[in-house]
Every structure is written in C-alpha cells, then in structure tokens.
Image (cartoon, rainbow, N blue to C red; front, side):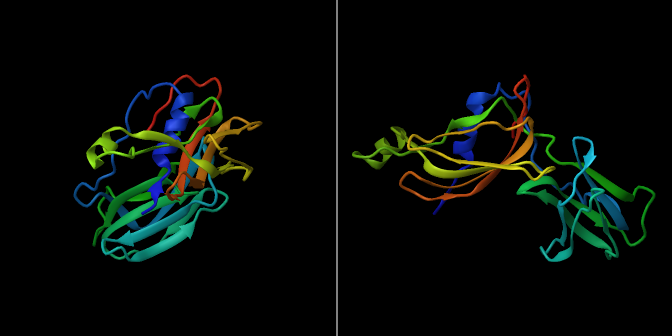
Length: 226
C-alpha cells in the first residue's frame, strides 16, 4: 500500500516556520447543518479577490451528485432547483478545500434560509520563508525483532520526488525534484499563496501524491497549521 507524502512534506516545511499559534478544527455535521434556499449562489474569494476555477459540488447523503460547477471570473457559481433534503457542499481548487459542510433545503424555506454562501480559499496556509527542505521518511529498523525494529526507526531520504508549486491566481508554475539526500529548493519564487503538489519519490516504498497550501512570506512571523 502506498504511503502519503503529507507527513514527510510537513516535516520539511516545519523546519522553515515558527510554531503554530492555534489548531484547526475538524469538520462535522450538526443536525441538518445550515438551511439554504433551493436556489443559492456560491462565492469563493482569495485575499479579498474573486477566485475563478473553483470546483463546486453538491451531493446528497447517498453520495449522489446533485450539482457540479466551476466558479466564473467573478468567483461565483449558482446552484438552482435543489429539492428538499439533506446535502453536502464542497469547494475545491488544486486539491485544496475552501469548504466542506452539510446543509439542508426545507419544504418551506424559513427566514433563516440563506441565498448566498461566501468562502475564503487559502486563509489557513502555513507561512514559510522559503520553499526548501528535506523529504524524510521514518521507516522501521531492520535486523532484529519486529517490535525492536518498530521502536528503533531509521530516517530514509525520499529522492526523486517531483515538486510543483502553482499560483492559483496567475497560473505560474515552479518545479523541482528532490536530490539523493531528499533535499529540495525552489528559488526565485515571488511571495504569494501557492499549492505545493508532490508526487513520486523513492526510498524503498511507494507514495501517494499530496497537495499542500503554503504562504510564501519571508517576513511572516506567525502561522497556523492543520
């Protein structure tokens, strides 16, 4: 079974950022969630600006798709004609969620039913001073009992992993590959919020690809990590 690169990547990025100031909470559905009108608009923004190309998907509790669309240049998409029922809404761009929550549509809409939902994409990106680090996989040791090997782990560099940094607003892409020691660096990148996509890599076992949100801000002093 392939292992995710997320833990290895965070280990690399954490070398470059201060300690987190708070923790992110898990998404959960309380009751039927918020109430929305049968017709409602979704607006997604990034740094106060409309964000184009965000995938909006509405599914019912049986995971059947009831709506799918993409935000336009004004950051909006309109969901129309949902019958009464319970639903889940997701908003996703480049593998990073802006929203994932439940909601319901009532037979007769109450005064609390919302006609518009606004989401911020990228507001929880950890701040990093530089896109650089080392990809390391902590693997069980070898040569003794399974328990001893599990306790006495060894750090193995992840080499030849492909890293791609993409700016969601401009579409600019920067890429590199980790070296034989697992080290990587992407230089000459302007400060902004990026999606860091990492896939491949060799260390004796396979890895699933992963997407991480990072805020390249050399002067940033505080950060928030999930």
